[in-house]
Amino acid sequence: MSSFSRRRFLCATGASGLLAACGNGVGSAGGTQIDARVDKTRDYLFSSYPGTRDLASQAAGVLYMPLITEAGLGIGGGYGRGALRVGGVTVDYYSATRATFGFQIGAQQYAHALFFMTEGSLGQFRRSPGWAVGADVRYATPAQGASLGKETTELEPVIALVFGQQGLIAGATLAGVKYSRIIP
Image (cartoon, rainbow, N blue to C red; front, top):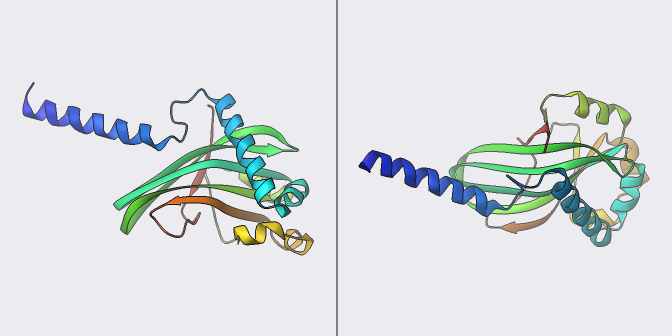
């Protein structure tokens, strides 16, 4: 094996190993596994942040992303898969991707949910070939998850809640995340 081929082999093996270590569903059993992860994430969300149960019942739809894995060393990225539920039933599956550039080092994993509070915001999300989080999204902190009330739902078309953060990159945000419909 030439040194060039050996180098190419090592790079490909290393990249495959990094993706496998993420544990975010790449190459998984498809929709069944995503739904199982979404169920666990939803149950955790509702039990840990009781106000989110009422919020979900008032929402036109909820996108649950059970696990987003991000890593970076100067250049970084993130990926995860989840399900959009309307009336508690999965209607579509989505991937979330993110690319970053700048001073960063580390890795983190987190979950998040997007509550689409109006039919219009849900329709815009579903019609879009690639939807990115914009200015119309209100972030709720996990501490607010217990008390998200009626006044919030009447004013905001989309509410994002990031929770379950683990890792070494501080401050998970959804800025720059692009959501695309997938077929698992």
